[in-house]
Length: 302
Image 1 (cartoon, helix red, strand yellow):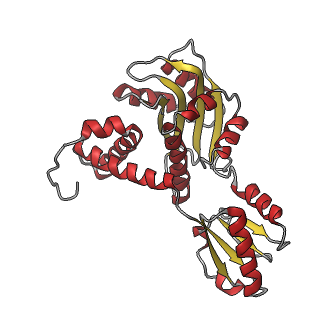
Image 2 (cartoon, rainbow, N blue to C red):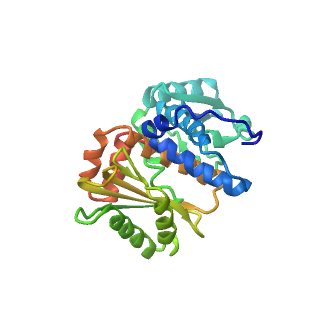
Image 3 (spheres, rainbow, N blue to C red):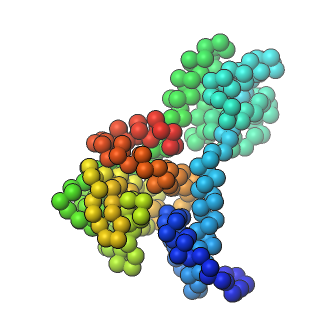
């Protein structure tokens, strides 16, 4: 884009059909780039960008080691014992770093998913602090880990989540409009959201061949991510792609790094569901938001 290089369109059709979700992310990104840079971008770029999204999502799906910190002022022996307990309880995919109280004060704690400590220490709102009061109680460690970490994504204060059982007698657009109307009445979506989505839908359908509908657009004046999950008890027949689950998403007008990270984690959840057809029937049997959150937690999709 910057150097105006000529590109060779050798696999656009294959990329779009094989990786529809990554292709859609690329399409949205290209649209934003065109608006910000005030230039027209060749559609061939879509395929190249989609490949990067696919590789990134695949890497996230494989699972990167989670990092936790241990802060202990009672000596290396105690810290080593805590480390051993954490490895046994949380598994080998957890990367554990040990710090003294002095070292901890200069560490960028935002890199960690949790901090375990034998004493009261300061941390930020985004990184859970778990106090270790017993060195030999594994059940306590596991209970505290589950309390602060499980479900932290879908219950995050920057997310407004709802769950709907959809009406099979209505078509795709009618069901999406109903979902938008309910979220608008709740004050989660801007009144212009419906018109913005309809304008976008007229350009390109938001139904993908993974039986997932992903209607989404910018939610004016909001700093929260609005996501409404809609399910059909049986597949809704729609041309050219049928639908079984709808993920309606309102994206904040301005994304700071924290909100963007949460948004990408939500994309990971949708991507994981799209890649596993076994999830469809199970999710479509759910009836409440609480059941949906429990299912996501149980399957380890967060």
